[in-house]
Amino acid sequence: MAKPLILDGSRVAEATNQKTMQRVEKLREHGVIPCLATILVGDNPASETYVRMKGKMCERLGMKSLRIHLPEETTTEELCQQIVELNQNPEVHGILLQHPVPSQINERKAFDTIAIEKDVDGVTSWGFGQVSMGFGQFPSCTPAGIIGILDYYQIPIEGAHAVVIGRSPILGKPVAMLLLERNATVTICHSKTLDLPSCLRMADIVVAAVGKPHFVQGDWIKPGAVVIDAGYNEGNVGDVDFESCSKVAGAITPVPGGPGPVTISYLMKHTVDSAERRV
Ligand code: NAP
Image (cartoon, rainbow, N blue to C red):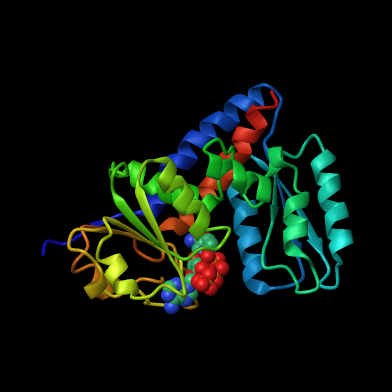
């Protein structure tokens, strides 16, 4: 089998960032600086790194970032109060609540406190509902980035059989909805799916969002299929066994350098979309 096309997420991210930067320049000419507020609760080192990366990307693109860091023992009410203040702050265009949050917090309640017009990370129930109905403003960023990768490489979605492994509210379910909206035939698999390999062998497009390193095996993949690995596990390892899958796939994302960088670029893009709506 010929070598697969490597779907380079960093390249897609850079192309997206270039367009975002031009839009930021225009907004600045109108006196508007797009601003993303990030909220970090507690001191999880990985979350701190993610928040720092998002702040740095804002700077690079000429945007503002407002970083809120709350103590580990923050209550749901205190967190929601902080979110309400950001909802009311006219200089803030997007709000990102870094998750996971500490276990005493009702994460769903906190997410659903974010105003829909500032939900640039696509985490609210209302936002998810809108995306599922086909008129969402801001789909969750990794799913939006996955569609961005497919479009950048002109991979046809319409009519393709897409199999998504995973059904989390931030990844599996919204990516399935976006693929459906683009007229793919979508199968969603999860931990109770019987005979996962047989489901995967029918897929023209596979999206792995499982959270298990090297989970998807090459002999589960139809020859020539497009494989998108959304997984990101300890040690920079994806959910797809790249070694075996790349021998069968027609196109495949690497990890790192797949949906990861595109996710951040879509967060920035959504924040600028939100700022533009208020000019
Ligand atoms: P999650 O909430 O833990 O969901 C994992 C999903 O995988 C669940 O729906 C689960 O099924 C399913 N699953 C678990 N074991 C399975 C098995 N043996 N067979 C079939 N399905 C199985 O994880 P997530 O937040 O969606 O994240 C998934 C992966 O994406 C992780 O590696 C995460 O680090 C990565 N991620 C990457 C980005 C990025 O920017 N690149 C962003 C977010 C997440 P049940 O529902 O039945 O339990």
